[in-house]
Image (cartoon, rainbow, N blue to C red; front, side, top):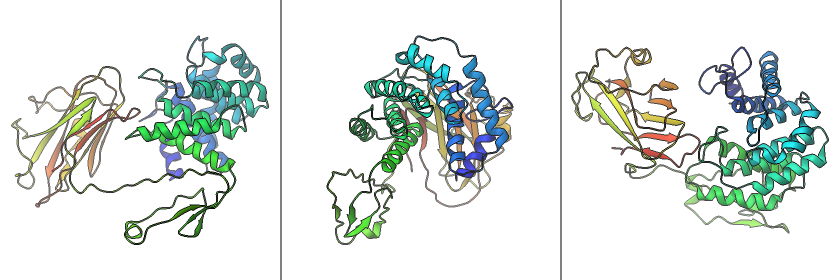
Length: 404
């Protein structure tokens, strides 16, 4: 999976070494640093990262750092790039000292402060590193603006600050306080973003490496504290499970349950609403329950934004098993002249016409519509999954249609 991720990521790299979310693109400094961080960690862990592509990524970061302007608040991408370059021995120690001494409190997020601290620690500047980690710990958990260019949230920043402080061996942050803060914020959320997931995982990994081996027993059997125990349904249907701590210190354990709902969830949402309508090729509404084999239908997804502000949205419409997407090239090329009745559709940043679903990424905070064509291919009765819209980096803002 890691090797596959490296390959997919490098397919989105430009000739200048920059990266795009969905295709090669130049212009998102923070994303460049984030991807380079992943490649750097993968390379250090022994995975095969092509040398030319990796050097191009570092060269891009060096160029962006060199051309960074002055700031009174912000610098999130700059701090991230400096940390990645420091790990690879390519940062200027003069730059690190200047930004810590002159701009330490101006960095716009706790994560950025911690990243500059981690860069300084890599160069042995522990006093300045601890100063930045202290700032990061002090501001961790504070609410920033709702929309952030760095894909962040208070939970992501707190987890990132904890990760980097522990990895850097700094005692300047209260790891117990940050751990409790992260656990509380994680518990408050029904859904978490990819950023929140990855940095929480990194924080847990750093703490496990830093801690002594836990003394945990499950039904009398010793359990490695760094291993996830997956309990299948049949293991939960018999005698009760006994989890025991035989050590001298308190240990936290998290239990996660997952499964398939016995009844379809009703339509609903927070901040958005989504409706799905089927039309004939002539523009008449039709029920998908009674269509003949080989019938072509136009699926129209209408997203109603009930909140203001920018968003990075993902629309995911899973197909009933009896349908397949028909002629996706027609919609990719915008050649829908024969569907003059169709409402104006949004310009998606990315769209995928998969065998089992239609997916589109749309950077838009206002109402919009999307459309694609399906063909009925198999007779039968099929589950009709819900269509979903979700803000990828604030996933509490989402909506779904009903299922049936």
